[in-house]
Structure formats: C-alpha cells, structure tokens
Amino acid sequence: MGGIERREGQRLELSDADFAGRDLAGVNFRDAILHQANFRRAELLLADFRGTTLAQTDFSEANLLGAQFDDANLQGACFTGATGLISRKFAGANLLGADLPSSLREFDELSIAQNAYRKAQQLFWVMMILSGAVPRSRCRSLTCS
View 1 (cartoon, rainbow, N blue to C red):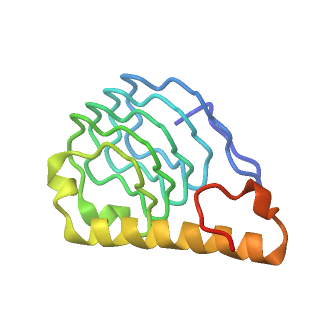
View 2: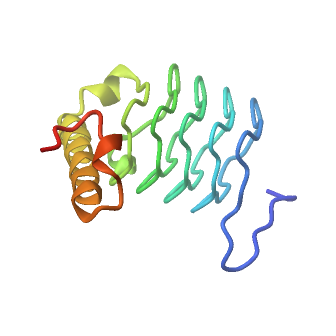
C-alpha cells in the first residue's frame, strides 16, 4: 500500500486510524501499533497483522480471508460479521475480551489460551507485589497477606 512507510527499527504507529471500507489486501502491518483502529468492512485478504497491537480495533464485517494474527494483541477487538477467519491464524494472540464469530468461539484451544493468559496476568501482579514494585496498599483484586 503506498503512503505507509516504516523506518527500520521503528514500529509503525497508526492508532485510531480509519481504514473503514478500504482495500488493504496483502498489506503488511506486522508489528505495527493500531490501537482502536477502524477496519470495518475493509478488504484485508492476506493482510499480515503478526505481532501487531490491535486492542479495541473494529474488524466488523471485514474480509479477513488468509489474514495472519499470530502473536497479535487483539484484546477487546470486534470481529462481528467478519468473514474468512481461520483459528490457526491466531496462534499466540491475546484474544481476551475480543468479540469473535461463533465459529472461532467454539475453538477449544481458545478457552485454554484465555485461561492461561489470565493466570499469567495474576502471577505477574503477585510477583510485582512481592518484589515491592507495587505497594501492597494498591492491591485490590488479589489477596495480599
């Protein structure tokens, strides 16, 4: 796609960008930051979103056939009505709170991955509290003794 350039060693920052209805087939967004971007009804055939930050991004009614989301942060992303999604293209992705089509919600490994993510997040906070990096007084959701 013309007009999008990235300098070597820098992550492309396009948070809040509006790509609604655009033809972005084959575009490489790898490792970019696209927090709260709008891809509603976009053509994203074979787009590369591997390692990309896509938290709270709107992919509703987009064509995502062959799009890759491995290791992407899709926390809270919306995929309502999106087509072409394949579960194996989400390997290692953070899908916590994402609104997924029923065909992906039934993917057994997804619930296992989401539970593992929640446990890792809790372990991280316990380690932060025990190391003194976070004062115990700021701990609300964990039992601190």
